[in-house]
Image 1: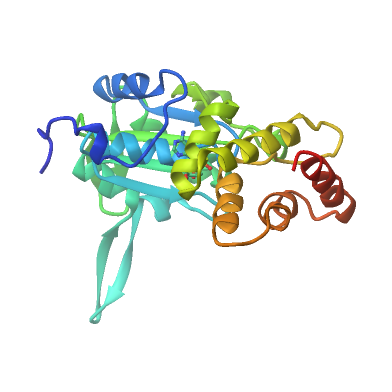
Image 2: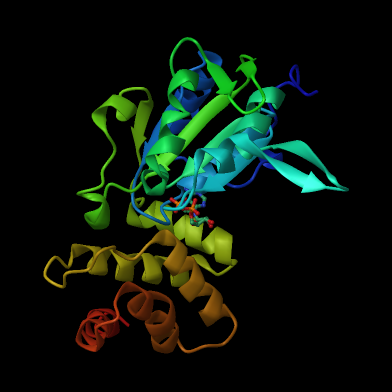
Length: 267
Ligand code: ADP
């Protein structure tokens, strides 16, 4: 067990460019056994942040991408049949509780209600996980932490997260970084020079200002990294921006062309 492992030096961790004070805030939440909710648009660094923090705190990380069919059993575990007999297999949440790991439920609002309910006794001061099927009642060790994320954008307006669930978590908002910081991230992640990264960050900031194209999401840092990667491997800039930025943002040909016009005007 690495329970007592000292905090790792930042050079050996997955690269994460801090935007505000989120590293200290997360560390403080972990030290005080508070569950954390990360809000923000897709591709803005939430998953990378959790990975970075898990490494920094020396905890194993269990990540679950939530979807509408995700049940409580997918998180807690189930009986399986093998070699003619049934045996119990822990789900990722149970494993994280047993091992004092960090469990990260990405896009938690996608999950079914029953899987959200199993989190409740883990997110108050009881910090317990009852496993009805085996009759066990697990008490989470101090090192265990539950982290969930959701994207409060367009498509989740109706679904949202129930206030009674939201109020169980300490929350942090994430957004795309400012141009300079985003350029640094793109340069580092795609291995391109800073000038190209700055150009892509500028294009993104223009696209993010467009309000009248009915885009569900805007250009993410992830898409900029894709564009930079294509350009690095020899694809012309405009073509790379079409494939990595305009096309992923819309299926409407007119909108794609409008996005291309905005970007081509900057090239
Ligand atoms: P999210 O979980 O918010 O959808 P990710 O964490 O997967 O987004 O981020 C997408 C990619 O963008 C990452 O794989 C990483 O390459 C890059 N990225 C975004 N923000 C940062 C950041 N602050 N520091 C380092 N890399 C980042």
